[in-house]
Amino acid sequence: MDKFVAAKVWEFTRARQQEAARSAHLKFARLRAARARSHERHAKYLRLAIVCALFAALIGASLTVNSYIVLGDLKLGELVMPNEMARTGRVTFRMADGRTCRYENFDNDLAEASRSRMAPCEDVIPRVRPRAGSSRSFNWGGK
Image (tube, rainbow, N blue to C red; front, side, top):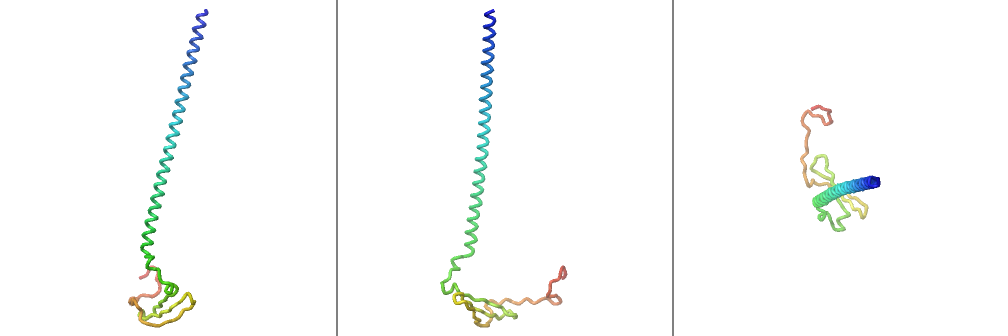
């Protein structure tokens, strides 16, 4: 009977060792799977961050290039005037005939405006006459 009990104890112990080994193997497999998911998640966020950074760089570069294009079109260097010219100006009023203009000069330093002269306009724009039979007022949908 002693041998029988010893065999059963040994069988029971062996079964418990195998179960413990299987349990440890499953535990490590779960840990490896969790670590793999964590790495996948980390890689996903890293890819997202790289794409967002590249997109921000693209937007920044386009804004920089467009600002240089717009400011280059303004030709800011040509707008800089000497001090005596920067604070004065001239306003042109075109008369009804379209050929003569009245010019007014103003000086911001002295806070004064003066009528200088009536003269032919420097840039003559031909006056457009309305067609015969047309009304000068707006007509909804009419011809």
